Image (tube, rainbow over the protein chains, first blue to last red):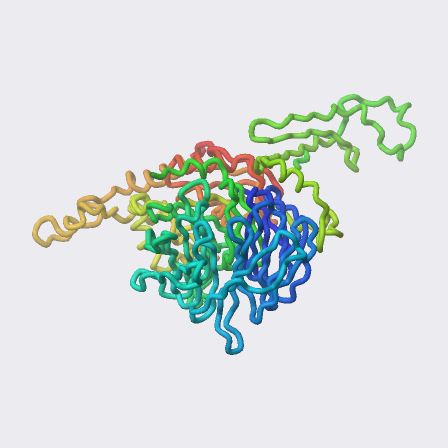
Length: 327
Length: 299
């Protein structure tokens, strides 16, 4: 493959998201400007100016008209994708970490970090169809997890909210009542901070990646552990292929092995695993720093990775990739 | 770009009466063969052959080889096509062509499949002994037995330590196959059995030469290397295709630069085949590589 390198961010990447049609790629980084690129050739389309702090997460509506971003400057902003204008800013009292739009784009989750005595929380806000009606009040506030909540997403049909974070516990909350319905079984769960979460296309199962050097596949309804994927590096980002039964893990370097780093550059890799067999099927090297973000194009024919080095690498798969034998 | 000097005189001698001034500007293009374009073939390789007069008035032939490769097919939905024509905004508004935010990688990144543990073990069986040899030092004159370089490093510090090596020293040692491990001791109740007589020993003539020959059969020649290509570069380039037992880059001793070609030996033939298939015509350090099976050695 000849990856396309996009260096639009000066600071490490934090999140990557493709739009539903797979033609736009949104990148968030620790610099203040989320950027949008064309997903086929990597050409930059524009940047969203307005945040004053690292942007941790973003989500785009199904029709690719609205973008929501969560930033360390204690705000989550709603943008017009086409023009880059800021439409609304939700003022949270702490740095906003994760954002996710619901099915139908009428509601959104905004997670906030523990800050100055306040615990972390998950806020649900309504997104009005008409901007004039947009208000900043939360419809629902969920509290309970200790420590940072790194990712929170909508469960199947918006009936539940799935969250995971620093306390290594995956939780399912009921949207109607706001109560926590389930926590994952402690024996099989992650042992360290869960850094990332990726849902399958139909939201029936999801993948969590953790600093304990593993990623786990869970059922969204029952929270049963289905599969575990083991690597040698702490996992910072996970992604599931929408086309094949592949799971990709991207990670960092174990702090203890820093001084024994290989002198060869570009050796941080995104590891591909067979989803069902839990076996490693391949790796794509190239990043000069730990991989912090991974995303698959909805058509499954390309994927991109964002690293600590500030680069986004967009890979279009060679025909060989589709011929890898599997079940 | 390859420039060939075709000799002093142009094919057709211009009549001296017509060649009035020295500083004519060299407008003798009619003397040159026309430009040839050998259109893109199935690998996307395109050759353009032009002829020019250089400063000395010699006719030179310039061959430019380019490869165009399609990276991906973009099948856009109607909405996506609309989005393609959106105006740039934010920081992208004043983007000039030279901004170079988006670049195609110059390196070919391979989807590396993990090696099955079985295959690696088979290959390293033969190399078991040379590897043991490597832990010893060299002579005072630093000769590395692995890559044969003098004065560079000791064998134990060889950058190619982990490769199977058909080195000369292998000749003197038996190849301890697992089955005969027990029998390598004395046959008759404690009598000393020299290494070459032991069960499972490989005779020098048969063993060493065989090892070397086998590797040279899988020798791949790489042409059109850039001046500063060295062994480690070739090793990195050919490694993904399989177990490389030896790399060699022909050097000009006087200038210390590569003579433009080198050899890579694989342990197995199909690895070499894969390498040839993938790397022939591959752009490496601004030159297009020519990779083929090496012609058998003269001696």
